[in-house]
Amino acid sequence: MTTPLPLAPDLQDRETAFSFVSRLAAMNGVDTAGFCTDMGLPFTKMIDGTPDALARLADLSATDVEELRRWSPRYLGNREHEFRGNRLHAKAIKESTVRGCPACLREDAEAAPDSFEGDMYIRGHWLFRPVTLCLKHHHPLVPLWAEANVSRRYDAAARLAEIAPGVWAGKLDKELRAPNPFDEWIEARLAGTPTESWLDQFDLYAAAHFCELLGRAIWAVRYPKWKKFGPELAWMSFEMGFRFATQGEATVRDTLMQLQETIGEPTDGPKKKYGALYDRLAFDLLGEAYAPFRELLRDHIASTWPLGPGDDLMGEPVLERKVHSVRTAARELGMDPRRLRKLLVDVGLVRPAETGRDDQWELFDVRAAQPHLHRINTLVSAKDFQEALSMSRSQFELLRNEGHFPPAIGGGDHKPLWDVRAAQLHLESLLTGAEPIYVNMHG
Image (cartoon, rainbow, N blue to C red; front, top):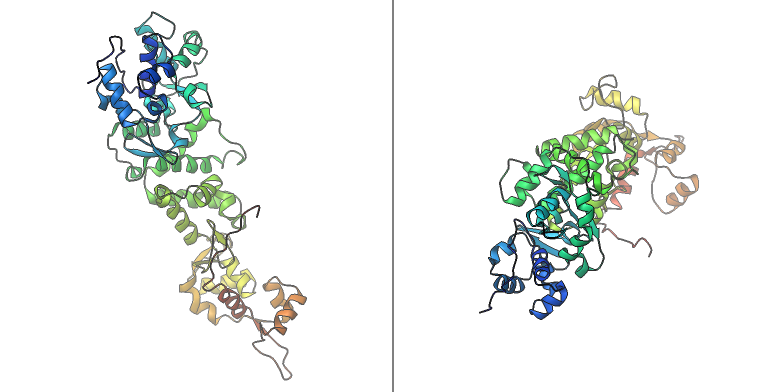
């Protein structure tokens, strides 16, 4: 059994293992890396929260090993960590910038006034990116230092000694702000306290990240989309998204609907309207934890957006249309949208222009409308047919020579006429059974 060191600090509330071992080394008058080597405790294992290394540290310092583990991230491999029962990507818990609350650090130092830094230490929850506020002092978490080298970054005692004069002088102090519901929800989840939020059923970081992305999309209504919130304003995106997401799926869908009606035109596409919310869920955040949010967004767009074959939805081609707008149906039928709308109003599929939405957003279910659309006369001349399908005369003639697009009425003394709807169905049939082909951007 290991004999505990005669000089050892007390483990503080929520202190990480790397912070504790760094203070232990400082108390014994040696640098952290050298101390860990001498004691058979590789500092990298302290940083990674390796169980056997934490057990060895607990024996050396006569500390409860479970308390050491409680707020120390544990590296699982493949850039993933376990923290407070949650599986987190390195970007969520191990950023190169270490943040903290200067008011907390001053309190630490006041408790042990032998030096500038006293007993300053790093709290585990400060490492979690969605945590942006100290709930004790209402002080925003601020960057304490940034360091690319991992061993130097987490040598907490040495880095705190460097910044201690600035902490005492108030150079890191920022304007206080009151906690918002998102701050309180994050604290409750990390503390293991159940809440009544709809988001409780999901992975913690995925839920928090979804709030951030949704919040950014909502803020884009007021601010240009190119304007990104800096780290010091990240709390605004988290709070705004949480305000709507916490209420449940119906509220999220309603929020998404309001966004797509407020920003731009339907022809802009969901990527332009939702910005990073769409981009990240479609192409980057493909893990299982994000699947519920990815499916929610995809289903909402598929159900409320007039997408059809040839369109792209979250990186996958649309093979079947679910809803039409008056405009997309008119384009498919090759007829005037005003005339089509009157016909659809007569059968109760859409509302009149005076009380309904714009033709681009007046939607109706394709299957329910199919019998009525089939009865609408869509025979047009060759010129109108080419315009309806957005093709040139030469393209039309080439396709006709290959057996495509025979006229619905032709021969004799009658001028040939073409069925636009039949042509659209023929084009869609070319995609039946098709498999998506993904091409590298720079391939």
